[in-house]
Image 1 (cartoon, rainbow, N blue to C red):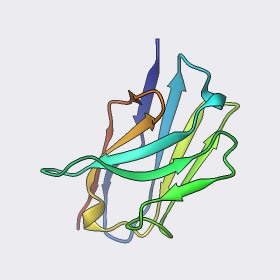
Image 2 (cartoon, one colour; image 1 turned 90 degrees about the horizontal axis):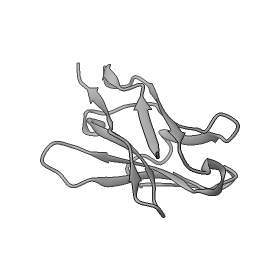
Image 3 (cartoon, helix red, strand yellow; image 1 turned 90 degrees about the vertical axis):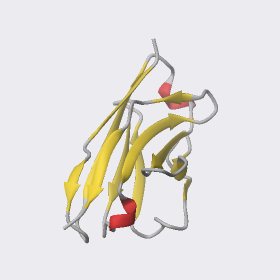
Length: 114
């Protein structure tokens, strides 16, 4: 049974940081590119970041490049999203995703507000 379980969300002030985690199970994690997406209230889900199987290639949305860092630990079947210099417009539910398989987690809420 495939599972993607996100954690680490919460309420943070503008300029603050959060680290999201995604625990993967039920598939061969090391064989798959992993992604993070987000969905803000009233908006469509959007791409945030992607990391290839080895972790050597990453891609980011323009809106987060330079502030967010995606990483993975293949020994632990984990993918992370380090988010720095957070802005109110980063407020959203953040989802872990296996893009080539259509697997999604349940999401974790990130709220950036003073």
